[in-house]
Length: 376
Image 1 (tube, one colour):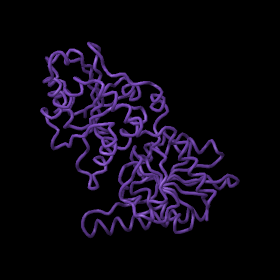
Image 2 (cartoon, rainbow, N blue to C red):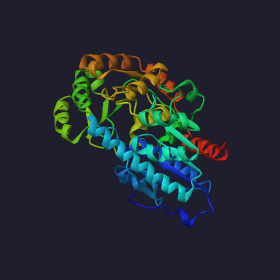
Image 3 (tube, helix red, strand yellow):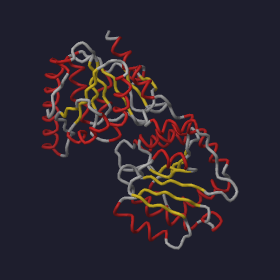
Image 4 (cartoon, rainbow, N blue to C red):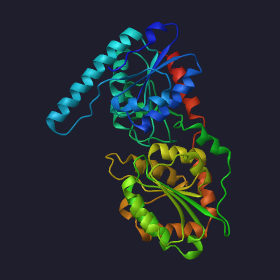
C-alpha cells in the first residue's frame, strides 16, 4: 500500500472509503461523490490502484491509497497471478479496515475496486456499488450479491439477478457542474442558413474510425449543408494529419484537436454530437439534453457501449450505428435526414434530456448516508 490512512487522528467522524478502478470513468463519479459527502462532516479516503493515483488532483487533499488488485490474465499463470494480487489486496484492505473501522465502502467498478469492497463485505461493513453503464460490469457483478444497495446511472440495468435488482436505486452518473448547468439551456435546432454545429468525440483516446469516416462523409454532403457546417472534432494525435488532409478543399469550417479542453462549451454549442458511447459521454449528453449519433466501441466483451447507446436510442434520444455499418454512405444518409428535418434533432434533444439525471452526486451522497444509517 503506497499511502497510509490518516483516519487514526480523526476518529470522531465517520469514515467512508471510495474504492475505484483506475480510469477516468470510475474516478470522475467518485470525485463528485467525495465532494458531496464532505458537506456532511464525513472523512473520505480513496482506494484505487497505481493507475488511479494519477487522478489525485480530482480529489484535492483527500488521502489516496493503492492496493494490489489483479485482473484474471490469460492462461493458467495469468489467472494465478491475478488471484494472488487479489488476495494480497484483500488482506491489506482487511488490515486497514480493522484499524480504521469505516462506516461504509462505496465501489465504483473496475477490478481495482474489488479488494476493498470484498474485504468490507467479509467484515460486515455496509457496501454500496455504483454502476456507470447500462449493463453491470464484472467487478460490480461479482460484488452485487452482498452489497446493501446498487446505484445505477441509466433508468434500467441489465445483468443482475432478481434478488439483486431489488437493491437498485436510480441515482444517475455524476457529471461536472459546468455540464449540469447546460440543463437549463434550451436546445435550438439549426434553422434556415444558420450554422450547423457538429461535435465529434472519440472517448479518452479518440477513435480512428471517426477520423476516417466523418470527414469523408461531411465532404460528400450537398454544398448547401457544407457551407453551414462548423465542426469540432477530437482525433488521436496520430490521426490529426490525415483528418486535416481529408477536410482540405471541402469548404467546411473545422477545428481538429487531440483533446477538447472546454467540453461543456462544446456540448452546449452543439446541434449534434457524433461519437462513442462510454458512460461519461452518455451521462453528459443526457444531462445536457443533446442529440447524438453513437458509434459504440465494439470490442468490449459485454458490449457495454452498445447497451449504453441503445438505452438512449430506445427512448428516442439518439441514433446508433454499429462500427461495422459506419460507412460514408450510412452516415451521410442519416445526416441528410436529420438536416432536412431539423425538428427531429429537437425531439431527440428533449428525449435525451429525459434520460438524464441531474443532481446525481447529491442523490448518491444521500443514498450513501442511508446505507450508513441502516446497518442492519
